[in-house]
Image (cartoon, rainbow, N blue to C red):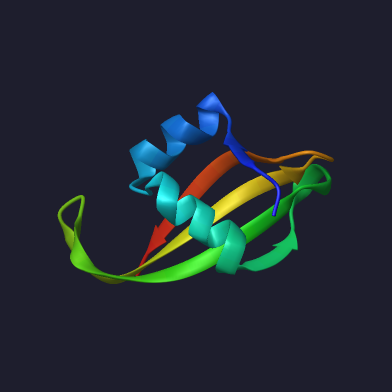
Length: 84
C-alpha cells in the first residue's frame, strides 16, 4: 500500500474532531469507500467508542477521511467524525 500523508488541514481537523492519526489510517485501510466531491474519495470506518465527547455519551464513532489518490502516495485532505 502507498504511503499516507495528512495535510496540515487534515491534521488540525482530526484533532478538533476527535480522531487520532491511527484511526484515520484505519479508515483508509479497512473502511468503505465512496465518491466525494471534486473526484475525491471518502473512506468511512465505524469504531466502538463508549465514552463522552463534548459532554454527551456515544456508543460509536465514525471516522471519515477524504482522500486524493496520487501516483506515489495517498493524501488525506480532511477528516470528519460522527458520533452516535
